[in-house]
Amino acid sequence: MKKKKPFGCLYIVIGLILLALIWYWQNFSLQTTRFTLSYDGLPKGFDGYRIALISDMHGIEFGHKNGTLVKRIQDFDPDIVVCTGDMISSNAKDGQAFLNFLESIGDRYSIYMCLGNHEQIAQWYEHGSESDYGYESFINQVKESGVYILDNQTKILEKDGDRIHISGLTLQLYHYSRRDDPYADDSLLLKTSYIESALGPASSGFHLLLAHSPSYFNEYAEWGADLVLSGHMHGGIIQVPFKGGLLSPEHVFFPEFDAGLFEKGSSRMIVNRGLGNSVINVRLFNRPELTEITLKTKP
Image (tube, rainbow, N blue to C red; front, side):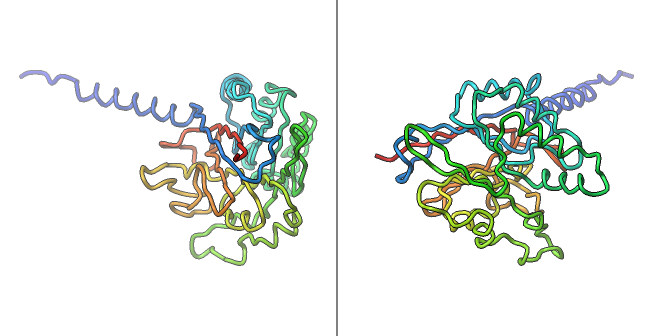
């Protein structure tokens, strides 16, 4: 009797190795996405203004002390670096990755950050039963590194004698409520009136808004944001070809604002796919992302 050749087992092993390599590449290789946006109302001093956007770090590092991520940003040489929340995880004490990033990038760039739901949950833990979580220590170290944390605050950016506004909106935790039945409650959704109460009415001039959740783009645009920078969606976890991101953190299948560029009237929004993962530790066709944005003034 002829012995069966073990090709079947070999093919299975090769297939598993390939799957492992694809999984690693999809989850731990950094992709750079670039946008150039032109505006009628952008002051001439900000023509060519460059913004590096990162979001949702969740303890992941690219290179020693996030050196690979820092090198990508340095190659772009932005005017500012923007972090749109969830730079830590609420279910793990993983803030050191962001602190390492801040140490590696140094004080060459101005860094602006808004708060995400994970920072807010961690803060809640800090004042609750898990008083040793370390959130206050983390946030103090972030501030000591020179980061401007915009917690329902607005600052002025200046370039060549011109000025624009940058605001950071902190949503309430109930604004992140689940949208699958029987949990859905429309009264928990963010309204434009909340933005006005938190930031005040949008004054004249160009407005850059940092808001962790992109779900409320219509409200951000109605408030008066010219450009919204966001994250939170993790690209929908799995990017289904020709369909988009599969699932949002609010348990919405194929959410409207999953990743990339969106427009409403004269307002634009860019949603970053994030760097790390929170609850579901998998990505498919959805690599971690650094976003490079260049603003242009229309002639």
